[in-house]
Amino acid sequence: MTKLRNQITEYRVQKIEAGKVFLYFWIFFFLFSILCFLFSARCGAQDMETIKLPKPKLKSTVSLEEAIAKRRSVRSYSSKQLTTEEISQLLWACQGMTDRRGFRTAPSAGALYPLEIYLVKNEGVYRYIPKSHQLEKISGKNVKQDLARASWNQSFIEEAPIDIVICAVYERVTSRYGERGIRYTDIEVGHAAQNVHLEAVSLGLASVPVGAFNDAAVSKALNLQRNEKPIYIIPVGHKR
Image (cartoon, rainbow, N blue to C red; front, side, top):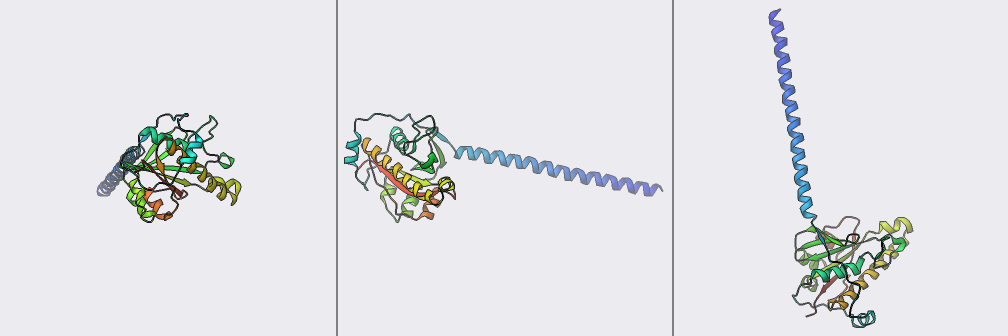
């Protein structure tokens, strides 16, 4: 009887010990998961560095008519870099907010604003945030060469100090207007692009609209979201 009792006791002890090991394993796994999450969040925060842009100027010494008359497509740029103020003006002209209600510099069907604007520099890839007029750093990799190759080796895309890439999320408009929303979105891209070209002239800069590229290759180079479609690449710089 005593032997049986000892065996039962030993079995219970072994079961408790096994339970402790199992519990310790799950505690370790839980803590390890938290550490991984915190590390990933920290890395993500570093990748998502934000840069506040200077407030755009609303007056210029160049008239609208003069900017229209002088605008030309330029495909040769000097190595001179653009200032933060110049970049701020260009992005604001493209999709900046001009009204407390959220209206922007370019008209949009139903004020749905399907465009996403990316800035490509030697220092990396940035997304423009119209509401706060700031840049969100997406990547620290220089992808200008990849972007040029994706555009059938148009070398001036790599040569220009910056490239503004206009992308469209068609679903934002087609969800309300159906297939017609595709046309509305494409028209809006044209509005935004022309603003960039005229602002470039106003700043004494040069630009060119580029539509010849491999969509998939551009999307890969910029690591675009699946619903973001690249429509226009606009190199901007000082004319050589």
